[in-house]
Image 1 (spheres, rainbow, N blue to C red):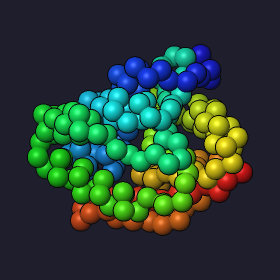
Image 2 (image 1 turned 90 degrees about the vertical axis):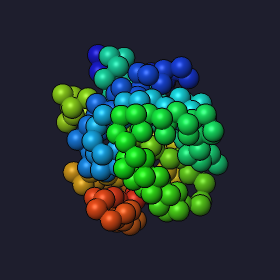
Image 3 (image 1 turned 60 degrees about the vertical axis):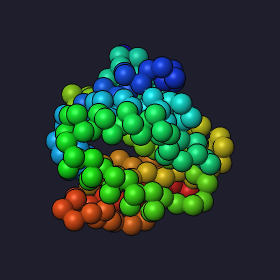
Image 4 (image 1 turned 30 degrees about the horizontal axis):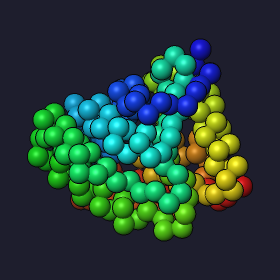
Length: 196
């Protein structure tokens, strides 16, 4: 059942990469950055393998249709040499040089805007389009926020869909800034949740 979830294993990068790619297939920022959806699955898989499941954590529903990826306080979105090579190769192969340039520009702006204060970072909460609006995302969010709140730490995310803002606000996040990371790029909303 989609309402039951468990922690992601370190080697489940293919599973969560597929879940995030399917969920984000209509995401304006990712469509712009990846110059379409073709590179999303291999790119998100590489990100999960080389960063989020290596040093962070995530959750997946038992049916494998929704999941999350987080980094703990003190860690940064760094894929390492092998991860950067895997990510660049995936983007170039599936979406070309324009996508690689856009992705690098977007990543630089988001890195510069990332809060310096220690916090948990939500990279992705992904729900299969057929399950969206059924409370699955809220159950995943509550599971992770229990860990965040047990550590008495704030949390941060970059929201790339305006329709998701009320969802994040229900879970205690507030918009701190709207940004347009690059010419032609859709806007994003930086959101912060104070320690509970």
